[in-house]
Length: 118
Ligand SMILES: [Zn+2]
Image (cartoon, rainbow, N blue to C red; front, side, top):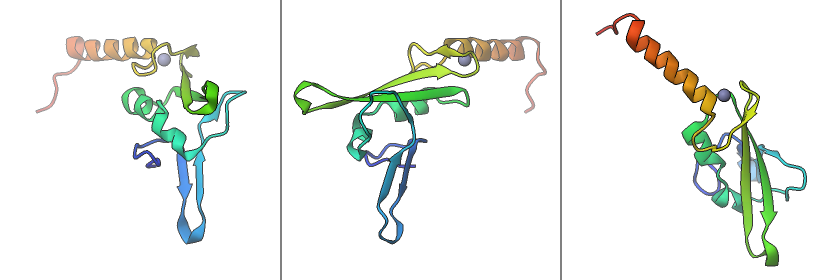
């Protein structure tokens, strides 16, 4: 769904029909995170992570904090791979092990596979 910040995010949900004004972030929040506000979408890394590294195995948990003085908030995303049960160090690149696997699949397809139909 399209977030208030104009990005596409799997975790954002809204229902603005018939006078209802319901906006939700359905991403898991870490213990101690602040409650989500619609404005947090503008500073949240999750839409870009999903766009660049999204896949069936990635899990995301966000931590919303307010910096000292309370004038700015931050959203941190911790990601891990459910397939490899491992944290993902660089969420924008996705799971290293998944990438190695998919490169191997590609390579074996090129080297020993059927020639592509054309
Ligand atoms: Zn993985």
